[in-house]
Amino acid sequence: MYDLTSPQTIRDLMSRYRLFFKKGFGQNFLIDSQVPDEITRLSGIDGTFGVLEIGPGIGTLTRALAKKAKKVVAVEIDQSLKEILSETIGDLSNVTVIFDDILKQDIPKLIDKEFPGMPVACVANLPYYITTSIVTKLLEARARFQSLTFMVQEEVAKRFCATPGERDCGAITLFIHYYAQPEVVLKVPKDSFLPAPKVDSAVIHLTLRSHPPVSPRDEAMFFRLIRASFNQRRKTFVNGAANSDLIPAGKEQLASILEELGIDPNIRGEKLTLEQFSDISDRL
Ligand code: SAM
Image 1 (cartoon, rainbow, N blue to C red):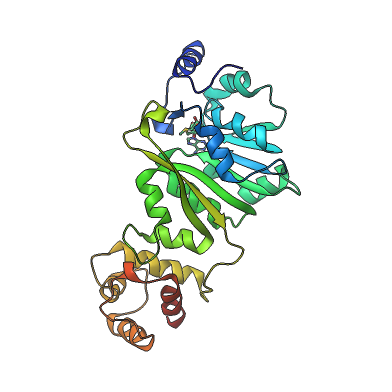
Image 2 (cartoon, rainbow, N blue to C red):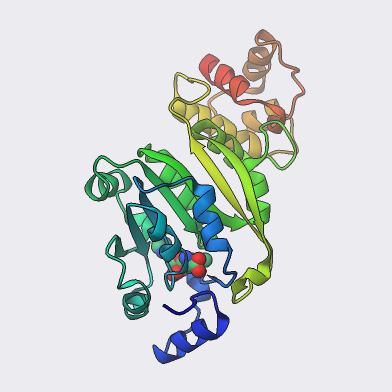
């Protein structure tokens, strides 16, 4: 088998099949020969695992995953990669490719169908234009993933893995910490991809929690409160949340809830912890 991380091989394949890199699908293919094996190792999978891969591209990471996993199911939106993939990974008996938009897949159903009785992980070099939608969808699905291991833009990795209450934190940080324990596990420079994106990347590993660290009585209210606080992050929590259509409470009510909970009434939303958001949402 030829080296799928060689830029010349990729260019030859693409020209033989009359294809070009589709920017709109976030097609930046890996050209560092170490990285696919390294991502596979960092994902923690072994020969018992079923692995869902998002966006196999020309199959570079897919081959590395298939060497280690029991079974790999790869979901690829770009139908025009069908022929290339049958050439590059057609010899692998433990790989299935589904041509569809991952955002349209019923994830728990796919897992039950494809990976019965297996521990399951999701591993991908994500298309950057929909990173947040994919991560949100996979976590909200509450599917039985043990972990998610994703290549994302470095700035996004920092935001996803920041500690709640600290700099770099956003609403998505708290959302992720609610479902998983995130960690940045590898930095990958931009020249590891063809074509090279504008910014460096990083691999993050999210270990799914069996139970969230807090138990708000109304999860929807809890997440609305978080979104409302970060939508207006320059304001105090009380002013930001009171101004938001997402929250059915005025300044006075919010201020008195903070007082009851012993929280500084001038605190900014970005400084609040998951526990504090949960307590406030319960009082609302
Ligand atoms: N895995 C390959 C690699 O590492 O070289 C390719 C990664 S490339 C960054 C992202 C891949 O995701 C592309 O193959 C792209 O066509 C695919 N993709 C983009 N949007 C998608 C979607 N909504 N559902 C499934 N695949 C998608």
